Amino acid sequence: MEQVKVLLQDREIPKKWYNIVADLPTPMKPPLHPGTGQPVTPGDLAAIFPMNIIEQEASGKRWIKIPEEVLQKYLLWRPSPLYRAYNFEKMLNCPVKIYYKHEGVSPAGSHKPNAAIPMAYYNKMAGTKRMVTETGAGQWGSALAMATQMFGLECRVYMVKISYEQKPYRRILMNTWGAECIPSPSNLTQAGRNVLAEHPDSPGSLGIAISEAIEDAVTGKNARYGLGSVLNHVLLYQTIIGLEAQKQMEKIGVYPDVVMGCCGGGSNFAGISLPFVCDKIHGKKVKIVGAEPSSCPSMTKGPFAYDFGDLAKTTPLLPMYTLGHDYVPAPIHAGGLRYHGMAPIVSHLVREKLVEARAYDQLKTFDAGVKWARTEGFVPAPETDHVLAAVVDEAQRAKQEGKEKVILFNWSGHGLVDLAAYDAYLAGKLEAYELPDKEVERALNAIKDFPKP
Ligand SMILES: Cc1ncc(COP(=O)(O)O)c(C=O)c1O
Image (tube, rainbow, N blue to C red; front, top):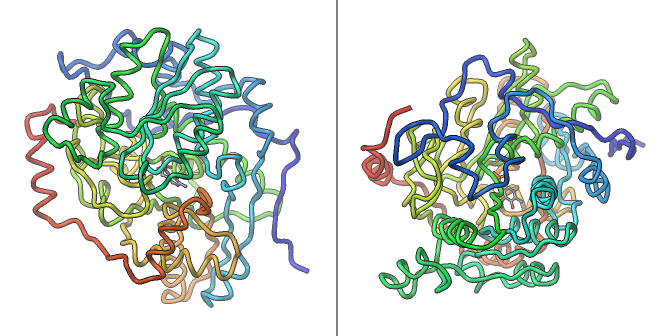
């Protein structure tokens, strides 16, 4: 009998998050205030986030203690298991050993609660009564709905209208966890009304929903905004994944040659990979690969530039790979990857060549996801299918090169609430989509007058 799972006891859960900012070989460019062009100050962000989170966003400390109350909630499903994917390996027939962190075991079914729980906790500590956020297909919204309920906060989620209408189950999850879920664009905010005035039938986008959520938070009483990816503090909270993986790999005496994750805003990829990037900075030989959709290829086709995080230009200007804040990605089924930008930390690591990026179209990704389901059993989220396509690719490269490789990746969530996407794929209704170069030119044009990083 072969060992399939490597488990940690509750008491072995990491007690600190890892902050890569302390170890970067070159400093990151700061976020800028769009009005002044100067680096943002904590005061600029105070209407959006509580001060305890702003301090973490700007922190250069290597280790940040995880509060006891957060650890206690994490223990509901963490430490998550590290699996060896023997059946998938056998099907691939390539010289690779494949290990993965199973983040689908959380109550909301993905890695998102790793960030939602500390965010709700720090808001509670700071006196916030109500949290507001946006969600695409609903993974982040449902995670924050659950976390705010745990800490006794109210929660409102602006959900991209097309998903709200097509994918009712995550909305029902949010309602079950006590949150209010509003289809975006809505009449509740100026940002939403502006879009509706011009496009009454707008299907919505993540950029519009972020604008609505920020406006609601800054105009509401005792309300704050919660972002599910992209910013430094969100990536910090997700490092629990990679820190656990390091302990688990150490237990079996194996070190990965390649570490991989799928990339929307960058949080689950950063979560598994940043502790290994630290090893790499300190001399370890390890390849780190992020997989993004070819319909929204910020890292592989976008410029590194200052850009807004949302359509209504309410966020600071962030230094990142971007397709332009007004880019509306094609309606691929991996809703969580349809974001125009990439986390500044991940963008910086790509620029420093510590991290590589690859893009995959949805036919390739669903093909890998179905193969996974038919060998390993668990049905992956359409977002997770992207890293599976990258794993297949890496395994085939190993075969071509005649090299043995150990691959570690983050299985970011299950797809049991996304079965309509599998139904469409199995019925042959999905199309591959590559971003045409003229769209990239347009993206460059939309941000050409912004400060350059
Ligand atoms: C299962 C799953 N994986 C990945 C992502 C991508 O987000 P991020 O890049 O922040 O991890 C999402 C986003 O909703 C998701 O739901």
